[in-house]
Image 1 (tube, rainbow, N blue to C red):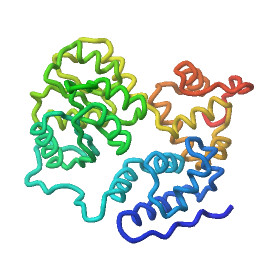
Image 2 (image 1 turned 30 degrees about the vertical axis):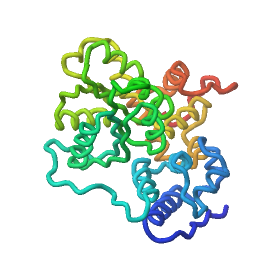
Image 3 (image 1 turned 120 degrees about the vertical axis):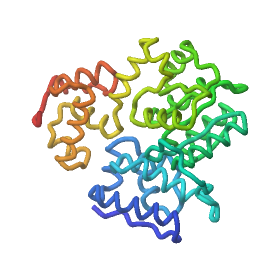
Image 4 (image 1 turned 45 degrees about the vertical axis):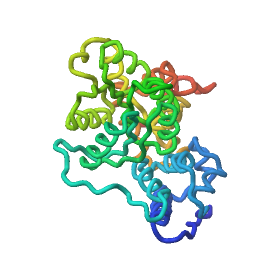
Length: 324
């Protein structure tokens, strides 16, 4: 099968993106577009356009191909944002001193309808080493911005005119569950905390929180955990439910492996179907077992079907193939 050729693009951020994508493509064994399509989430046309076209792809198309290649989504989000930024535009404003308690850098969208507070948050987060990929002053705009830039975390004001922060968060999370949302509000009540968590957000912050508290909350939700004000941590059962669910989120590739298990495939057959090494397949299976606490293959299938994570295949039966 012929290797998809790397397109020629001018030097700069776009070239770095193309080089990184071709490197991941080759590391994955240079699969054909048909194989990528079989992995799910990407059509043959999209795969060929992303890999072979000199035009900058849209983020959803690039994300689908990178996911199919088992690449680092966070790395490619950053490369894509750099390539998309107009030439001559600085990546970030210079900052003087780092904020105490800084955490590993993440990509943030800041949504706040008060200009001074919004700018203060932006500066504090940049000082901590985070990248601000966009700001917004309304819920409606925040939804479009988040789905365009695909940040790691959205700091979302709740009390805005028009669409509330919780409503905007629900729309964002419905469209892309990988985006974490932290609601920031002047009225951090137990009732609002429950409403926010049920809408799918990862945490609630008071506007009285200082920079260090915000940074800790960002670190918490980035780990897939729930961040709520200490006085509400034990109030609703939904907090415990969300904490349990957060530890069991699955990546797209993990879901593909789960589906293959549900189809009754052995580890070797999964390796062939997904064009992954046998070692990689078993690595994904071990991660899935860690997240579910279920060690038996048949038990994994039962859990996945009960939770709607996979589609049972006719004839797959209760096959529990080789490989544990």
